[in-house]
Length: 296
Image 1: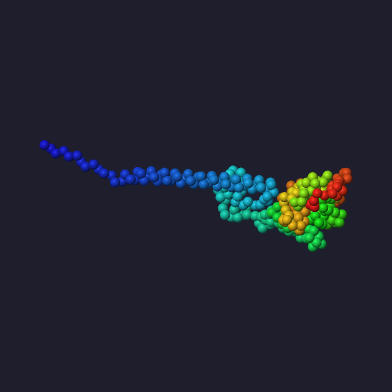
Image 2: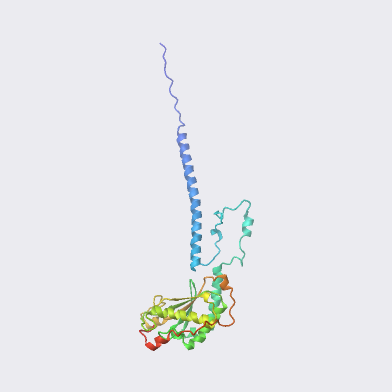
């Protein structure tokens, strides 16, 4: 009888290549997805950064600066995605020169330094008597007019003896087209008179009185000015001592770094003060006549 033996089955030792190929394919697809996601997130991050920067610029926190590589073209392409034919020489030719590329913030800082030097020279006597102080803050140059030199206690009317000093300040503001915010501040001692029910009214009245004086007597454009009252809530010293309270009773003239609209910045300085019709009310008269609830 013929012996029929089945041939031994052929064992393939290369079957692992199928699983390995599948694994490599999946790994390739995984990294492609990661790369694509990273590019999308980068675009979104740059767009979000630009939107936040624009929002803060409108609020006056940041100034218009050169964004450089952060700018996004209208088609949404990243700066690295240059059009065909744009070589290194073309990219270098688009870089701003020394004068053209100077950021607005640097120019503003230089302008404020110049204004500060003018104010320090014009108010040297008042600074020496500690009636005026100058310092820089993030939003601009702050000129502090202290109550001891510019206001009677509880009054919103500038002292007659301080009008000359304030006129010197107004003259410098006329020559520099900057936005100006007038801030009224008091100490923590409450006031309650027929004219001012609280420190809020007194601080606001002092700020608006100075704005009115700048407009009526010195011809400063009203579009450049704003007024605000902070009462006792923005102190520069401790209210626990008489010296500290005296420093807190002040009106701050803040020369802002926020750029003015072109139509306002390009306005010529008026030759004569623009007088608003009607007499200017004496906001501090009633307070002086009716007594004070406290020295603020």
